[in-house]
Image 1 (cartoon, rainbow, N blue to C red):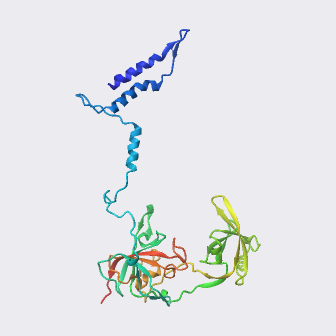
Image 2: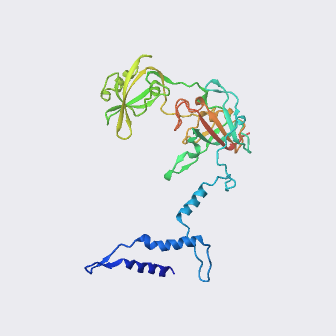
Length: 364
């Protein structure tokens, strides 16, 4: 039936062939809408009738595209149901802890000074052995800053193909490492709180780093900014680094003016003038190494990410059992302090998630 219908339409197309007065054959472009009109009329009529069955075949209803889109829109706009009704078994929204679930640890001594207790929440109560003083704790930890994983033992090593492997932290529980029993000592210098260096290839003096909460950082000077002039003195890359250091330092409370060039985008540059006041700032160490020995006990996994000091404070993990999960709100002074780590900036608070994997009891 479909073949015959097609042939009949094809035959009707020759009706457009004619002859002009000179006897030459002329052809006119067939009107596609006219050819399809009878077929569309039949389809609209078949849509209005119910499907009829015959001995040979069943007629098929053709649903217009406009109606199909309408049905799809109706399905998409159908009111949402509960997750359990749709087959989900896990929570779609992260659980929010109630205020009454927050626990404050006992006060402790850190860096030779008394420290108030810290807040934590036990999201999962362990059912294994209780962690006691003298035991060796094997834990996984994750430091979350603004909800993102910044430092984690679960991503301790990076392999090919962006794969990572976990490396648990193992340490002796019960006493602070010797490093955290001493007061924090920092060398200080009077200046703007910025480390600078000369790039010999570009012939520029640029900022390597800024001290936490120093004059340069507060003013908005960033690493990789280029210093064009210091108090009107230019051509800084041609001067000895000792002379540049003398220009940046001075008496406390004295003024200093810097002209900074900063890249904006790929090709644009922004030149700004900063007026700063010299003050005493701390010189941060190049690297941050935790030396855990003797009094602190065993530490395994030194090649992995650096754990925050709070994880070694006995009061922070007191009462945990194997299999337990604890989330600790870490203040900056027992976290990564004024140095920072990874995506965690200096002087920032964050959340520390600790999972106690195993407790190795001390030998009797």
